[in-house]
Image 1 (cartoon, helix red, strand yellow):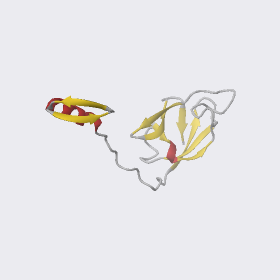
Image 2: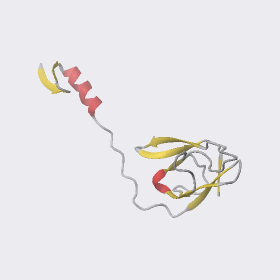
Image 3: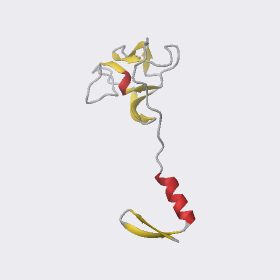
Image 4: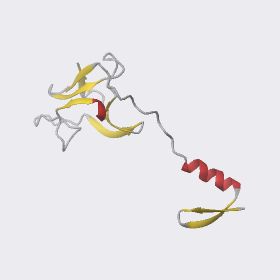
Amino acid sequence: MRLVYFSTVLFAMNSAQRSFLRSRTQTRLFAAPRKKLPERRVTISCLACGTKLYRYAKGNGAGSRLVKVYKERIVNDFTDEDKPCTCPNLDCAAEFAREDVIHGRPAFKIIQGKVIMK
């Protein structure tokens, strides 16, 4: 048996407990994102009222569906700072996305059918 000092308490651990602890404390590292933004720019607008929401550097082509918007790729942001996921048009004020962390990077998950991409 081996004594391990962990989290300000002294534990007596057997090998199964040590391997469990070792697997739980390992962090998964993701590949670093590219420094350069993609060349293709798309305009994201509200489907209900047509108000511009973002100018976005889209990575995998303009023909594919828009599922997520990484915050670091937003070129121009036309939304309010207080409510980043709602339409800035006061008559519409529709929620078009949810804030999330995807692959360790802050992003907006787009609600399908709420935005249009041109």
